[in-house]
Structures are given as structure tokens and as C-alpha cells.
Length: 148
Image (tube, rainbow, N blue to C red; front, side, top):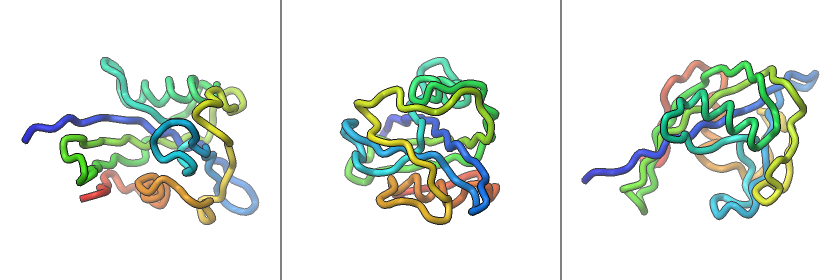
């Protein structure tokens, strides 16, 4: 059976504090997917003709109003949902510790809140496959799977 692969780029903004590393997360609302779950502050589908890096920069501008990200590739995740085996996903996860501008909610119809959270004390609930990716940040793990 043939299936469609849908690529997406995720951006985790990170900062170090006296209490450890923090990540900027958004509370999803009004999207129809994982609403009321915490997720990457910026993420979205890779569009035709753009690389995952390009998509990450575009999503950061569109969703957070920031630019100049110093992106670090973290991992790729292949995931599936058994309920819809024709819909397969490939997610590219990036982190950034420097950028220009102050992150703000640009799309309030899709995001209820932005919050800096300690990586070792994430809020509940977090989008399940993103919790896996967050757990592997900085570990050098190049490839993850979810849902298989």
C-alpha cells in the first residue's frame, strides 16, 4: 500500500538559567490537533520547494515573530498512527539558543500561552511524540520512531 509522508519542522528555543535548561513551549488551542497540550513554541509543515531548515525559519517568523535563529539539528522522527496507516509523518526537530527579537504569540487563535519550562520539569500534558523528542534533546540521537 502506498502512503503519503508529511514532513514537519519543530523549533525548540532553549535558554540556560540557574535552575537548568528551559524550553519555550506553547499551549495549543483552536487547531483541531492536540489542543490543550503543550508543544514546541513554533512548528509546521514543510512546504513544497523548501527545506526543513527553511520551514523552521519561516515558522519561527510566522508564529513567534523572531528571526536570525542559530538552528541546531537535533533529531528526525518517523511516526505513524495505526488508525490511519496512509498518513505517515517525518518530523525534523531543531533547537536554537540565539535569535533576534522577543518571542510573542503571533497567532492567538492557535496558541493560548507561551511559557518557559524546565526540560526536567515539563508541564502536563505535552504532545506525546514531542515529549519523546524533548527527552532526546542534546543526546545526539539522530533517528527516533513513534507509534510503531
